[in-house]
Length: 255
Image 1 (cartoon, rainbow, N blue to C red):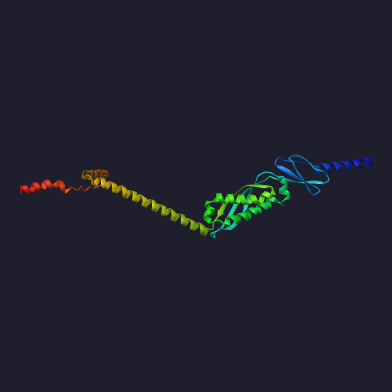
Image 2 (cartoon, rainbow, N blue to C red):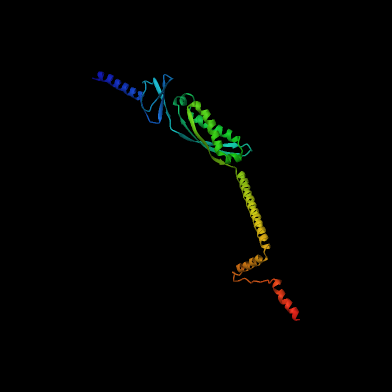
């Protein structure tokens, strides 16, 4: 009985080996790049994947999901010789699993290195003001350059966006002073424009009032009414000399 049991045991072990080395289950977002005796056989999946047993065929799984990767902060010297630290966010996806495995070793690491190098290169050609105000254009340049590098690897780059720009403390203080001076300049210009408009309005009003002396008197009385609204005010009411002239003349005649 034992002599007959050994072949069955060996057969069972062989079946287990065949099953473990022949069948794989891949998720919807996974693909299997299969190599047969070291040569590329093709891409399979998702679902059940059957491989020739005894390691004649081997596979390497590749995820087709979008990868959002944080680019390591880079020290960049801008075109106007300002040292800043910049980090960014890179989004990409494998569109050709065969190329992602065959054309490059560890495509994730390779893309990260290309992103870091491109970030330093592109931002080094820009001035600090452009880096702070023209981010959309710089992001588009980064995406285009990195996309051209990664295209032969079967990887599509969706976005490369600058995330944060860390300025030196000295530069932050200088920019704060510049912003404060700019706000003061705008305030002075606005005040001067207001004074100019006020002067024009007063000139027009004086021209209109000078044409009618009665209007001047009415405006004077209106100002007295407005001032008299304050109970604690003492008013000194000047009397025009023209109003006293008749009385003076009558006194002279009687004398």
